[in-house]
Image 1 (tube, chains in turn orange, green):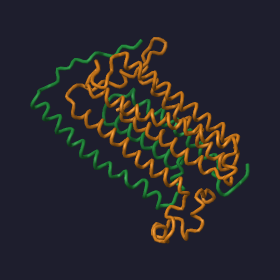
Image 2 (tube, chains in turn blue, green; image 1 turned 45 degrees about the vertical axis):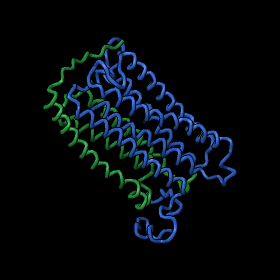
Image 3 (cartoon, one colour; image 1 turned 135 degrees about the horizontal axis):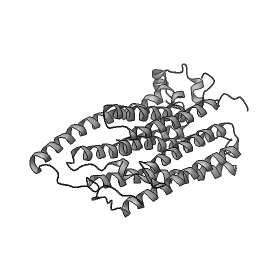
Image 4 (cartoon, helix red, strand yellow; image 1 turned 120 degrees about the vertical axis):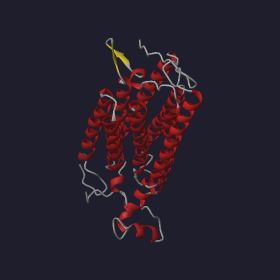
Length: 228
Length: 114
C-alpha cells in the first residue's frame, strides 16, 4: 500500500517508521493534522471510560451470588410466534456495521472532493445511527415494562439492570451525539463551508474516527454483555 | 476516478465491510452454541478480529506512523492490569459472600415475551 499515504506530515519525515526521529525532530510529533491527533486522544480517554464501565460490570457479575439473568432469554424477541434469541441486538449490530461502511466510503469521497457523494453517505450514516437509537429506545422500554430496574429485576441478580442501563445508555448517548455531529459536518460539506477553507476535507475523516469508535465500543458491549 | 496520492483504493473498504458482516454473523451464531471454553474463545476471537479490522482499516491506524500507533494503542494495555485485579477481587468477594451469607435463595422468573 505504498500509494496509500494519508498523512501529509509524513512526507517530510526521514523514514516512515522513525519513532525516535518523530519524537526528537523538534516539531509536531505525529505528522497528522492537530484535529485528528486530538480526536484520537479524546477517543483514547473514552476507551478508558467504557473500559471502566465494562470492568465494573465484570466485577459485579463475578461477585454476585444470585444467578445472572440469561441474556439470550432476556433479549429474545418473538418472530412469527417463535422466540429468537438476541434478535433485535443482532439487527442493531448489523445496522451499526452498515453505518460504519457508509462512513468509510464518505471519508474516501471526501478526499476525492466529491461533495455530493460525501454529503449523502454521511446522511445515510446518520439515518442508520438514528435508527439504532430508536431500536435501543424500544429495547429499553420493553425491558422496563417487564420489570427490569437499575436496582433489581425478576430474572436474576439486581446488578444486571444497573450495568445494562449504564453501559448501553452511555453508548446510546455517544451514538446520539454522533448523529448530530455527522449531520452538522454533512451540511457544512454540502454548503461549501470547507471550500472557503482551502477545500480540506480532513474533517470528514475526523468525524469518521468518532463514528467508527462508536461501532468499536458496540463490538465489545455485544461480546461481553449480550453474548457472554 | 482521479488517482491521487491521498486516496485509498475503494476495494479494501468493501472487503473490510464484507468481513465485518461475516464476523458478526459468526459472532451471533456463538449464542446458539453450548456454554464452554470453546464458546468463550470464539466470542473473544470474533470480537478481536472485528475490533482489529475497524481500527486498522476503517480508522486508518494501519497507515499511521508508529509514534501515533504507540501513543494511542499502548495505554489501553494498562486496562489488562485492572481487569486482572478486579477479577481476583470479584472472586474473593463472591467467596466471602458465600461464606458469610450462604447460597443465594433468589428464584428467577423465566422471561416471557409478547
